[in-house]
Image 1 (cartoon, rainbow, N blue to C red):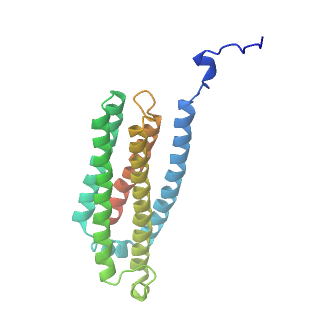
Image 2: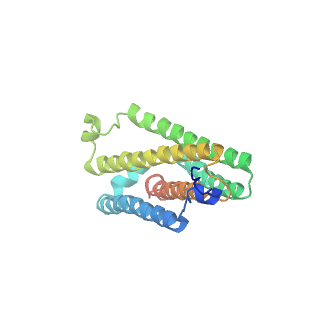
Image 3: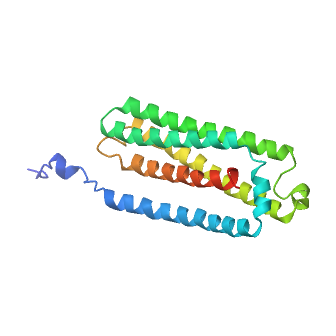
Length: 212
């Protein structure tokens, strides 16, 4: 008679998936540290030029739309709250509420980018286009101000788009059951990234819009 292989229990048949949540969080914090270094270097560059051209920076700041800048600040702070609440909702098993909070966060990101597009379009309408002849004819201090403004807010805008895209991806993972109340580290890491994006704007807003 042919020998039969010994039956395997479900525990033996299924591979054991080990997830190191501590390492995952540590890796995310290390990545966020590189983001802080990136923007920190730009902030230092801003500070050095502001000390060199204080009046030009003051005049440049007066041309920015404080209302739009303030509105975007409120939008991002609100989005930080909703993404934090989404983690709590997921851990409590309120999946629909969690998805709604994440959808609202992504909508806030969209509103931020719409406002930023309106603001940039107004600057382009007045000839303030990076690399343009009009920019080159401005006093050196003002051209530096607008150059930093477009570079830093533009880089931040790219981070907003990336952060929103990551949140949409997490929403899909939640829908597929790959991110749950027991396995929520992916959402938590995405939330940390979003908080950094918001924190950077909280520094950018007063530096450019409230400069005196």
